[in-house]
Image 1 (cartoon, rainbow, N blue to C red):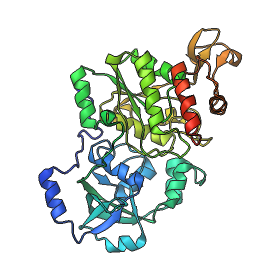
Image 2 (cartoon, rainbow, N blue to C red; image 1 turned 90 degrees about the horizontal axis):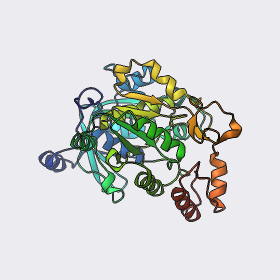
Image 3 (tube, rainbow, N blue to C red; image 1 turned 90 degrees about the vertical axis):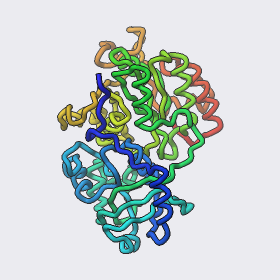
Image 4 (cartoon, helix red, strand yellow; image 1 turned 60 degrees about the horizontal axis):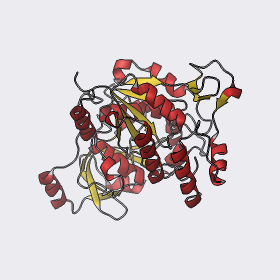
Length: 390
């Protein structure tokens, strides 16, 4: 069985080799410089290593309009989230199509170059409604969008400097590396799991259900930009390791971080996340209740329904849909509304508010909700970092 093909059929690689890097840097003087935001740096690297295949750069207007109007790139491939580079009007006036510009961080270090192919204005309200389903500025995705500059620049990028991360180094694998890992282990069917929260018993249950029908689980936590009140990545990573080490077969799991930025776009982001995991080599992808959702902006299962809008072969990765899960006292095990006939009085499922209250009081949530060692670590971390939420 061959590995699943990347989206578009080819894994993109826009990382300069040594010769190309030297040539680019030798000719960098005089280029207009564009300073990237944290999310744009993340997107830049995701493009360069192929996680956003088939994108080879920031979107031009034809792709951008296609994503908003038909959930497709200009070439017809399904795609639901714009990947764009914003600049001020004055900066846009300095740029010319057909010319090259330097992409730099806030310290003015050159990260990449972009060959300008397009300049166009952004309709922020339209993008908000099309991507997030709301133009409410309280939505974190909309908040970010409305703070962006008013012009967009599109074109192919070439990366010359990667961010030198010093955290989770052993878990930072690019798509080409995860594909190599899967091949070396002989895994043919791999299910990906997206998370930005610690794993509780409901998560563990659906992961193990998925493991029954595949060869391995790729636990793929997002460690790029998230909301300030989300649990810090270092705390989450410790929780993931506690669960994997204590309750999963070591020869059927891999823990790899995803350095992408969170959009909180609900159903649109569910498709986006599935395509990313396809590029990393996953054949299946878990879609739970309110995937990538926030607040009450999306229905509990909108992230399931959106897959019906595409031909399964176009998406190319098999979604596994899971209902709301809980511990049922009468069943004596984890269950969902698909498998349990008992009433809510028999179900143990704690709200985030209740869990936060318990942790802040040093109380351990019941073992039916969270593994004891995970709860103990969260209590310890909660006392030190009282700004995040569970």
